[in-house]
Length: 173
Image (cartoon, rainbow, N blue to C red; front, top):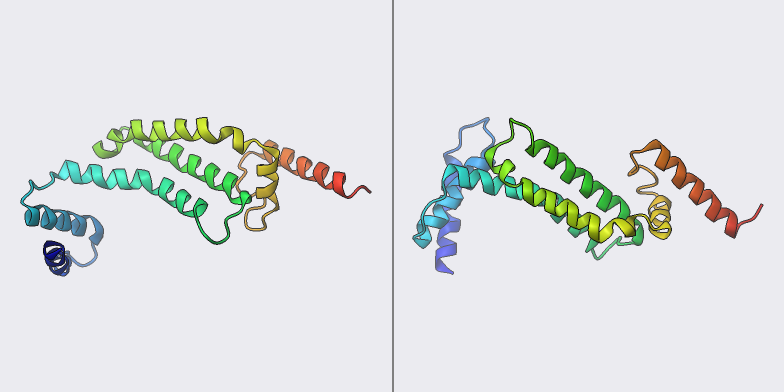
């Protein structure tokens, strides 16, 4: 515990080394990681390893955000499931596209298999749930989402028709 409190005293010194106008996060993270490694007598991370860690965090961020929403204690309804998962899949597909570009960093390219695996796992586990009428209608009826999470116009129209049919079942004209 003393080592960790000592590391905490080192971090303000690290922020003093960052030039004004620069993004402080990468340099601060690098210095913090070096401080931790030095304190515990471990080998310092190479710039490539630090780049990989940053990209790994960027890849896992959408999943962590989705889990925070779905595991929340407030405002957690069935209607949150479909839009959250659709948004997560879109974010991961964007990262997958970015990782396949020639300009992608080495760390992001190394995370490509992780991104693919996460997309496959989400599809395998949740695609059936995302197509259930009950889940779709729950999302459509939440004022926070409505149909904003649906990008395809044809699918949006299908969901509107689905909602109208369901309303007509309970409230005949």
